[in-house]
Image (cartoon, rainbow, N blue to C red):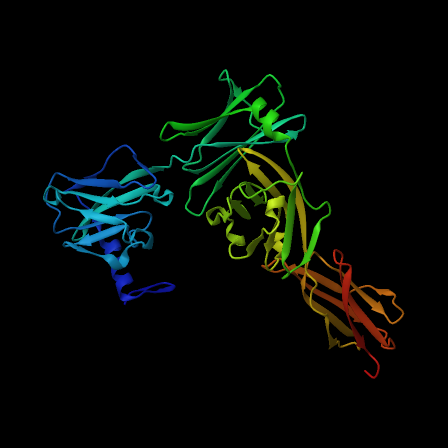
Length: 455
């Protein structure tokens, strides 16, 4: 056991730190690796190599590949045996040690199924007794994602709004629009969202006001691979055939639900049309990831936001009339906000916007009393589970407002407010006081009365 100030380390960890403290750079050898970054595509395999100079056998040495911490290597071996217990979890089962040229001091590490998280710097370290040498190399990961899709919305602000989307790109790609002559067009807004695998979803919006523009292209470019993918759309044709063929209608007033209730988001087509073959998408701020996606009768689970997984169900009994309802179970404060319901067919979509307000009607107030040294008393009223910020008021027996001595509203990790307010009572002839807490959205309140008679 080794003791450091403020730490108590196990034998294995202590031994490792002892080795680090006693290792010295070697004058007998140095380690080299490729001077230029290694480029690998997502899903491919990559080979990382390093070499001893002057060339000599490394069979008796410990060789360790690591990222930021030598103590948690990507791979490590000593005397021909793998040190598996130290390996980083995300590389287990994904790496292969290659020592065909170890007699000449050359080793390689093969990493299978490259992911965006593999991007970055790697270190290769040789250790011989108390001497060590190491070098670093850089791995650059690139993902050539899907070809872009261009969707068309109705007329917006005197023009036609086009949305270009694509998935599976890494690193963040460049997006640009061109007209049929190859002239660049100014993007209205652009969003890059990283999914749980580290790949980027791209969404770029273009507003076309120039009626002479008939054809528009969207290109997505990977700066590492120097490759791009594009898509083209003909505006007049789409406008004439499908753009004005239907409209999506949603509720005109905000939808109000309480925490824990089920939410119902309904939208429908007018005139009535069968939506079975359409894509219907409920989204928040961007089209991906979505709250819910319906395509050709199936739920596309891979595009769903994490916070809605397992909480949604589609009511499609009126789909032949173009009416769909999305149920979201167990309403949360984080569900509050605007939703968009999109019906899409052949690259053209229309949408309706829905406002959802989630309210929390908290617990009944609890009043506690504390006696003070000068004969006064302090009453404290507490309650949990309110949203939005409630209105809190003390009142006397005639219903007149009493000023609070102190008060605090604190928001918990689920977004609900905890209320705590205190009243200082000097006139003990007061018969009773009431603590009232009301929710401004629901128009409901809860109250508690504290009687001072006989105190």
